[in-house]
Image (cartoon, rainbow, N blue to C red):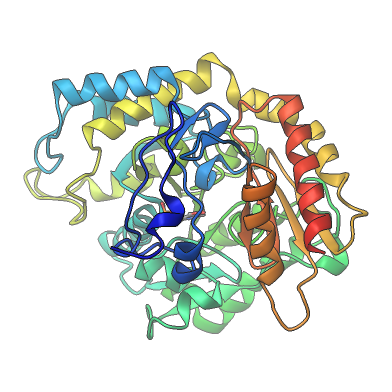
Length: 454
Ligand SMILES: Cc1ncc(COP(=O)(O)O)c(C=O)c1O
């Protein structure tokens, strides 16, 4: 029995949920485990815009969980769809067999995606989606007789999940440095953020489109015939909300076209309304060859991810004998029936409640609310785009990340607010159902937190 148990045992007021009585066994991801287990932040249930702690305390969800519950929590239609599906069909393989929900959801996603992005491969997370996209890119060139195209290009400060492919093309030092040599043949574009040129920008900064030209340097170095794909997040979320400079994505697209390089947008965060459109590709009018998604596809309710491919990418594989497998890739739980049911219900909700349009309409108000924090002590920069804000705090001397951690902890305990931190950067990305009053309330809470930690 762990000694931390007493500190989290609920006194069971009416309606309080059961809490675990031993915290030892669970190894928490991306969390300082010892600090957490000494003083845990526990969530017992959720509804719409709120989490509830085991003692019943309501906590405003400023982060859509982990950027995923875009329709809000425990929405009745999604819960009902999952329950119905569990009764009817718990599981069916999608290797050599399939179930109707997989086709229905793929068609719906294809209809939402721009241009001829209309072939959908399912997996279970953003990390799997990224590795799937990288593998499709490599295999695409291979199947077309351009097997020398094996190099992959990511970007500094990119986050593409935690698979070996994703951390290889990703650009976060701590996610890479302990894990060996990673994939060979990977280069990185420079990050698009410069505080000097972009501080306190709403939406896409004016400065920085030229940074896409670094791709030409990499092509000149290695030759286009060795390069398979470039992968970027249209808006880098995990490293602090970095919207693309105006014209940057267009420039990447045209350089890729010039050299026969596939362009992959990692839309695991930006997909399903975060930037006011179904996909960032639509907001920016730039069509990638492959687009990854996860998180919002089920509004976070059941794990699911996937890759949307342009028609010609899929068609390149559809050759050879008809009874031969075209792509040797897939997961036991690709297109899991519960995830498909949850996905269909989530897409219905997004449509019925016009949540993508809602995010677009709220964007100016959200940006105004975020920018009210501008004059607070220790605020170095604020960036906003869609229903997303990143706030850089000055690090405490000699203790990078300590102030951010303190802010996250205080927000939860003292302000009943969940925020996300990366180092000393705070991120806000509430569910798209947030009311104007809740957005105002959220930033008032953040203001008090910033005053408390600076
Ligand atoms: C852009 C991007 N790609 C991939 C991932 C990884 O997704 P998952 O944690 O579902 O594996 C994330 C997660 O935040 C992400 O933001």
